[in-house]
Length: 142
Image (cartoon, rainbow, N blue to C red; front, top):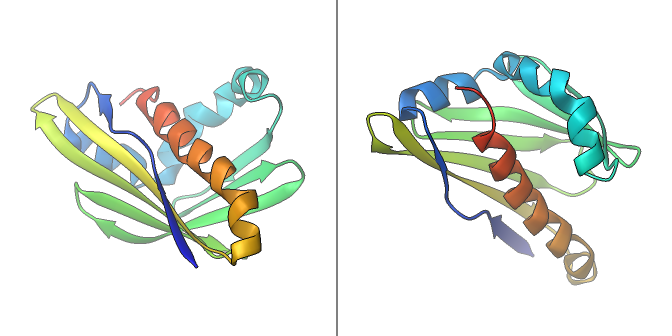
């Protein structure tokens, strides 16, 4: 059963191009890793570690490593990720749209392929995850 979880639309005070250029190369997210210690407290210790390179991001959550790899870049508009050996088949999109010359809006969508039993277990955490990720993306300095 394919499920989709969408964040609300978030506004970022930077151009669509600046947002895309920052997020399409995950090496640019080094400042997030440096702030992880202070963010950990806000997330009740759920995120234990965060590592990444140009094309992939691994988050350690409650002892489980989740790796997302960029599988497609649609310049200025969308970055698509796919789960790599994740406990359930998972994908994630970050959509970026212009609002003005110096403002963009984003939306995070998480897709998961689960059975009926798993649906009850994963729906709430994945919906919260999409929203928290979108919030986190608004706090990055572009």
